[in-house]
Image (tube, rainbow, N blue to C red; front, side, top):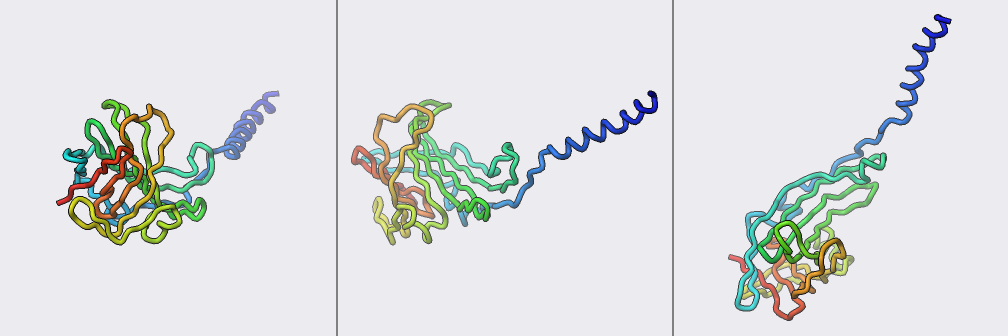
Length: 214
């Protein structure tokens, strides 16, 4: 009897150990995709604070946040092998409005995920919350795929007494996420410069926002 007990004490832990190996969390990273230099794929200088002319007034914004992080896709929590993507986040705000620039590295052969740039315009509700966002999203580089994304490129555009080159334009789409719906004037069309970011918004009240640059 003692001999059987001794053998059992040796075998049983081995069985549990083998079972544990079969059910272990075995997913692994299949590769990482990074953005690279900010000026290459995220053509907004975080220190260049946007100022927009709106009729006889101006809307000045300050840098609210700027950082990089990584996301895993598919998420690690579902137990599959995954790719890591670098993201770059920059947000400008004032007491009434905000602009959030979000770009994600791409290139995975598994997900066929491209480089993307998303820009959210939103009204600020209070210091901790915002109204529903109005968004524009397109793949990078913009010069090679704009026509496949319902966007259009102007060779040049005259905005607020000066010319800007290679301007991407397209519709702004409402983001039906959490938050209250904004009841003021909202952007309907955007004009994006790879050097200056959003240089102009066509607004629903007929008064455009036009960037002021040095």
